[in-house]
Amino acid sequence: MLSYQHLYHAGNLADVHKHALLAWVLDYLVQKDKPLTYLETHAGRGLYDLSAPEAVKTGEAAQGIGRLAAKLPAGHPYRRVLEQVRADHGPSAYPGSPLVAALLLRDTDNVHLAEKHPQEYAALNEAMLDFPVRVHKADGFTKAQELTPPQPRRGMMLVDPSFETASDYEAMPKFFAQIARKWNVGILALWYPILTDNRHRAMLSALEAQNEGALRHEVRFPPAREGHRMIGSGLFVVNPPWGMAEEAQRISGLFQTL
Image (cartoon, rainbow, N blue to C red):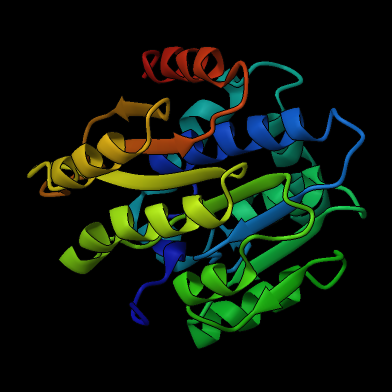
């Protein structure tokens, strides 16, 4: 949806869940001295100012990274990225997933970021100027089909749509099946919201039926405000790397401190 802007939600509890696990996976992958490919279908702007009126208005960042940043284990790759971004851009700066990836990956890795929202694309381009990444003003699903299988084949794709319409849920099983056939060694990660109406369930049932051995990890939390429908965050990961299930449980423990 071209109306969606993540600044209202940046740094919320779902972002903490998603970005903590993303950082762990990327940090795990770069331990091996082999190049990789990172693809992102819905990149957003990459760098957020949590003191902006949009972020302050919802209060989601204060309830998310504002509460959990200090509880992250020392040395965790997500915490390292947070600290670097704050040192570079100020205490209210928050890294979106493109910046998490750019700071953890190496010059030898290929990074492709797709974003079709004009303002978000412009901000993403600016945020990525100092990094060897490719930013595409394009529909993320279409660009992913074009770029897979990538070279190098080792790597990861993050799919993170807004889920503002029912079509996003309906499209995921078919999209993942297509990408998995073309890129059977790729780590394919889908973030999804858990809403009060549980509309994610049919999508997850279809995804689990066609992806044996995938990892499904969910965390629950109180709504950000009265009437807010999101009560949790989920990640569905095809070809999860060794140790990710254990790391997911550690992240669950972090959320249990809320």
